Length: 557
Image 1: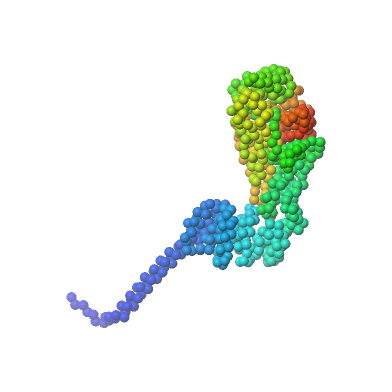
Image 2: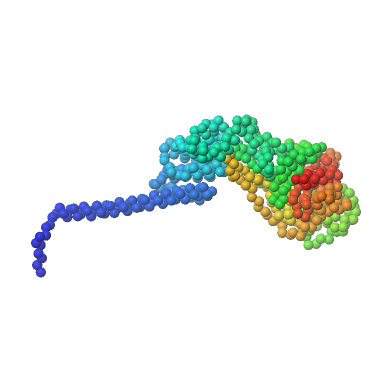
């Protein structure tokens, strides 16, 4: 075979050209691979940063923090990651760490591309003014209407109206036009700052209950018998407003009801136990809101719990009983206020408030079961919480063990105490057949821009499931008013079907305290209440007549 190479030319130069082209193609392929690799990594980081922002704005800071840690070694978008770390610190409440990170970013003049406006809105929506200030101070050197606007809000929130108005003056006409409503709200706040007074606590009908004295830095109440000093700390975190469950008109009427009396009174709006009225006029205590915090011996009002404990026993054989006014328990005499004579059943025992009958019930039930039921009804418990407010509950001696101590406990005497709020809450539980709603005062709260950031949410809890036993106690409480010998018979009214329990406590030498708890209408309860009249004497007289006047006021609501 012969190969003919005629007309074929060989050149070393052509071979070099081909090799250069091949190397160029390989290099371009390598560049494309590297570009794709880095582009993919950049895209992944960019997507992750977007997801982290979504998590932070969705109140999922812990999950966001884990994703930020995963990006810690990334080469891409380092400034964005550092700013996200600062925002995560802010949302975790680590303000000092956040400020340090943001200050470092500012010194480095780092450029970032986060959704900063959404984070500023997040903070203002929650009235987190300190966090907003920290973040806005970092963003402010970049300029822009949005940063200037949030700076104006921060200055006003922290009572610096002058600087707020200067910031507003720097806003562009277009921004002012597009945000006229928000600017009007800010203007109202700044006007209040000029006056030195900001109305910020309102009743259920939006009537002012208290204002903040800017110069003195404290809250001044506009209502009798109710103090709002516990709100000072919240206001000092920045301007905000609160709407309470209180009815200002009812609160003022209670002032006249307490003419000639000392003590405390609380009315709950059923079924969710919003505090409709809370009045304090203590005789000796310095507690501003004694209705929430001052403990006292409950006397016979605790007997509704003793009766419930007795009805939960299988063996109910204590009645009929002949009350002679005294008995002997474990070798010690136990006395009643009077000899009641024949006591037909437990309902009559409650109506007459027979101490000896209830001492016998306590002994029948036993200390362990009675103590457990008392603790179920929030004796010896933590204070009841309503956001930043705390309401003290009752307490008793868990170490009591003798027959005499048990008899006193069953009758509400000796080492046991409660507050007026706790007493009203007990009445509310019985009115709802064992369903518990923790009493609350704060209905909602709003930021300086009238944006809600807190709303009370009712969470019912069924303390006991034996509805029949609650029904028996409720009927016995009605007999306190309807029975001819009932301790509350003088409170009887054709206009209201009452279910109550009266009590007396204190020292007869200085004047007994008259105590009453209850609810009405008995069949379909609308209100639960409790009051203590210090040194008022006989609950059957002064307490019942006071209750009758209270019911007239509530019926007129």
